[in-house]
Image 1 (cartoon, one colour):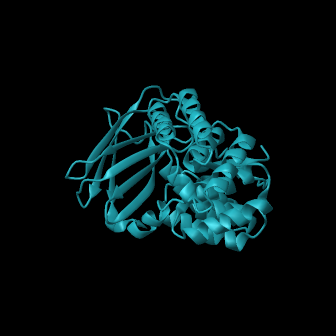
Image 2: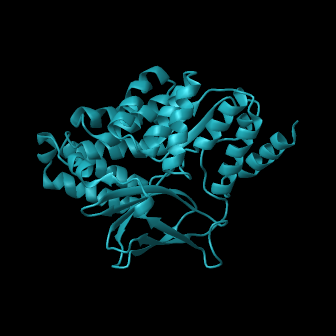
Image 3: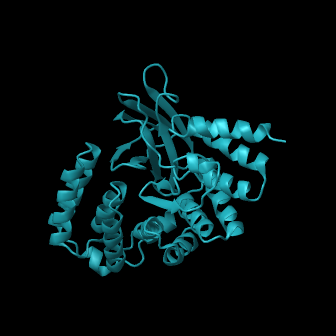
Length: 333
């Protein structure tokens, strides 16, 4: 393979580097071949009642629930793969992190346990979230029928009925062409089903309707990389990081953007920051960092990144190759 794609939740970004080691490691996060479903059992620290949402990182899916007063929550019937877990605590903010669900991380009952310590998380502040939801007049003018179609689309996604979700979202934007969130969801689904030109079109429409929205901004930056438009993507990815400096997705994407343009120092800066923010991020910043270390002939550093990747993503299809490659690098003089 001469191209390595990385999934970013609602984004995927492409690297064109032909590196001897990692061209063997397809970075597209894929579901485990194991059959069956899993349960995610979580706890929020400190214990509190919070809104908890789960989004498919590489496939169209979303669902939400409320934790109990002790901060406990659960999601059942999950397919193996990578998910984004978002925890919103009123008055404090929102924390996001990547969650892996699969056989290596589950107990004998198929349950994956996770603890979200808000004290150790980089929260999107309550004030920033409030600014995010200060919608321009065109968004406030979205009529109730369009909003109902949007809500129905989310219900379809929770049942993995992608075509049904798309139908509802298309009706929503037909009723209200100014509905930026609906355009963004259409772009997300197009992206995750690898229809990148359609995704680009939808994300552009979302930004036209709401120029201040973060989601279509970072999404457009990612899909432009998939379409080999790295120079154009840089402006969007840079603006996304300036808008939200502690967003793991934005930093990982900007780092990979710099990598594709040959600016390795800036690539390392943002990829390392992304890894600090979310060490298991589904964009797999470790793989790009390993490529950079190999280019610089730093084999121990490359091996360390590959080992970290394999440890955090044991069910990824490329985990075994990463461990094997790391061992070979360690064995070299």
